[in-house]
Length: 218
Image (cartoon, rainbow, N blue to C red; front, side):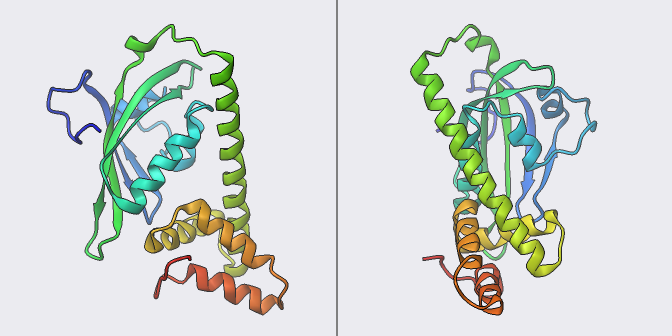
């Protein structure tokens, strides 16, 4: 584990800093992070979707789960992974961060920085076993994101909101319950598909999303 904050002991200087506002699902990047991903400063709005789109397919699931864990427990983290910039160049990076809790004790921000390690990892070759493992991870990520999308659709229908608001509702409910996003999404989809009158299914979904009196999922 690497301590949050650059103090000269790290192998490389951070190329950029980030802040993720959890409940608003809003990212703030420094100029260095835009450049790392191949964008002009301010040329694109940073988002969770954009960040994941630039993760190397073999590393996307792990990076996503590290972010989810930080949102839940706020503990310091470091994650070595690859990103693919807008030109198609694969970069080896280390992301370091921690959660910042609000007055209610919940993680309201995740903040940290990226270090570019590409220069020390060029020429790395993966064998067939590593490729197969990466394919499995990509399938798992796709399945989880598909479930999240289905849950968002259910919330949009139930509350008459757009996709962005549905995602915010899902993330906030998961964070307040100390649960992973995809676990709550699984339950939302399951409750919506249970054999019960429509009003009963809707009530069951709303109970999962109720942030006024959050309770553990299990």
